[in-house]
Each structure stands twice: as C-alpha cells, then as structure tokens.
Image (cartoon, rainbow, N blue to C red; front, top):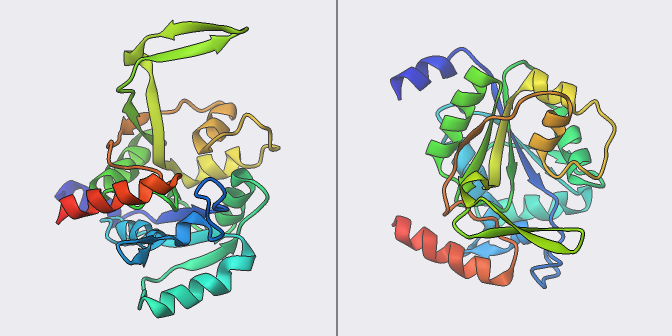
Amino acid sequence: MSHISDLTSRISAYALIVAGGSGTRMQSVVPKQFLLLNGRPLMMYTIEAFYNSTYQPQIIVVMHPNFHTYWQELCVEHNFAIPHVLADGGETRFHSVKAGLALVTEDGLVAVQDAVRPLTSVDIIDHAYHQAQELGNAVVAVKSRDSVRAVRNGRSESMLRDEIYLVQTPQTFRADILKKAYLQEFNDGFTDDASVVEKDGVMIHLTEGNYQNIKVTYPEDIAIGELLLGMRG
C-alpha cells in the first residue's frame, strides 16, 4: 500500500461515473441508479468507493440533465456530501463518456465506472489505477464460470471457457489515451470504453475483478446487492 501511496502523490486521478440508465429493464419509472439499496440510492455506494480510493480521484457524475435536480434533492435528503461535479449525459454511453472527458483538465488517470455497480471494492479501484499508470490501461474482468457457446450463421459452437472473460468496470486509462480514442466517430461496435480504445490501436490489459462486482440491471439484483452488502458487515 505504501508503494501505491507514493505513486498517488505524483499523479492526478479522475472517476467518471456514468449514470445513463433509464430503468426499463428494472420495470421501474425511476432510473436504476436512483433505486434504493439498503435505504439509499445505489449510486451513492458507487461514488463512496471511489471517494475512499487511495488515489483520491476527482469525481464526475454523468447523467441526463433532466435528472440533475432530482439527484441533488436526493443528496440533501440522504445527507450525501461527497464532492462531485455533474456533467450532461449524451445520446449513448459513448457520448456520455465523451462529455465527462471534457471536464478532465489534467493529465493523469481516468477510471470509467458504471453508476449501477455499487459493490466495486476499493482494492479493485486502486489496483486498476495502479496498472493503468504502468501499462496505459486496466480493464476489470472475471473468468466465465459457465460453459459458453457462440452462434454463427445459425449454428452454435462451443468456446473455450478458460479464454472467456466477463468485462466489468472500472475501465481505467491514461487520460491522453482515452481522450485520443474518443476523438473517433461513434459506431455501434463501441460497447464499452475498452472497445473504443482498442479501435484506436491500443492493446487492452485485463485486471482481476470480483464476482461480487455486480451490475444492477434486473429487479432481483437489488436483493442480491443487499445480501452481499450484509455479508460485508
């Protein structure tokens, strides 16, 4: 930890929390980042994890402008005072990240995080920043626990499970690499930040994630998240 502390004293860090969810798959009129997890909006847990990082990143929350006031009211209601700035989300995740990057004013490291991953650990965040500083990027992922098949031309084909990784967030990059990649025109192949950076010719480096680092997408994920939070004590 002292080695990481020495590094953090010499580098600027940012966290882009992307909160563009609409709540459709949650069968909710409220975007999922605002749904309650143990009595608090789940995005608050996400922000707290980065606030507690050794790298002490500047936190930028990117969300649709229609929800800025609502979020600010939730912060007052729940006495949530962690410093962060709001940026206007765009039409797609790509455009939202690009909008957040406009507020990254210094060289350093940028972690991009799904707002609806409230159980990301500080250790994962710190390790991703550390690896990104050394290698240029760090994309959190876990090995598939299940057998996987791909469908090509209407035919399913077995794939080697040991070669399949499930990508999570944070996805962390040197700021100059990420900004350059986001100068590209949008295309439908951009499913995450790693795909944008890879399209710009940069090799992607994976770093170990955690199976508890779930993305809240469906109603049952709230119950799972509360159970996992309870296990943390």
